[in-house]
Image (cartoon, rainbow, N blue to C red):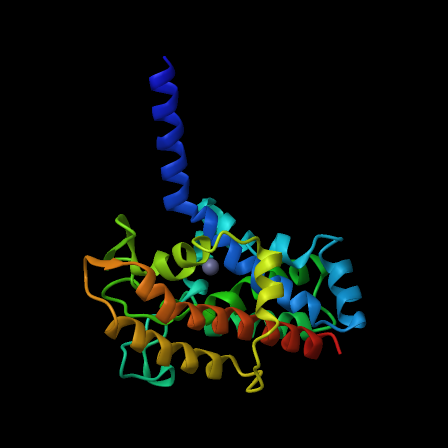
Length: 254
Ligand SMILES: [Zn+2]
């Protein structure tokens, strides 16, 4: 009986880990926490009323959580855009269901419109908080043929994972820090090149994803050397996402 329970526990844990990327939540919460610290008082007040008191880090993962709801499946393409490594976003055939760029622009448009009802403002604000994080995760603008690194298998300290999960979950969790500890730690990063244009954010992620693809082969062993070399990029992307999310929110709620 005990054996059976333990088995069921591990089965449940692994299945939910795979589907929802439970620990990948940390990255989104770090971005939201950094943004929160950089909002003006006026913006924070408006956001609090739209989110009915829920915090930015709390709502930052909502857009991933609704993926399992059949009604919300139509938004699944909003989280990423697949671009061939040597092409520009402007030149690719667009997904008719939307992508991370069209979705971010739609969020901004609805939030800037004074006539938008409160319920849609809440919906789009929660999406915006999430998607500014996603567009800064380089594998979210990766290749179509390997589903943004999901089909490239790697071993993280011997444990089977994939390139996508390595970048949004495994390397972050390996540091065993809470999202607020992370956010505090990243404050030391000096970063000035900010821009409010989502297409510019995407271009930076494309440069990073090129390096990531070049730096790994299928079935590679990932250990300390890889983390040492690549974690600064994770930190930089999280921090940029947080600052830019704050900038765009401050601009929307001016
Ligand atoms: Zn997402």
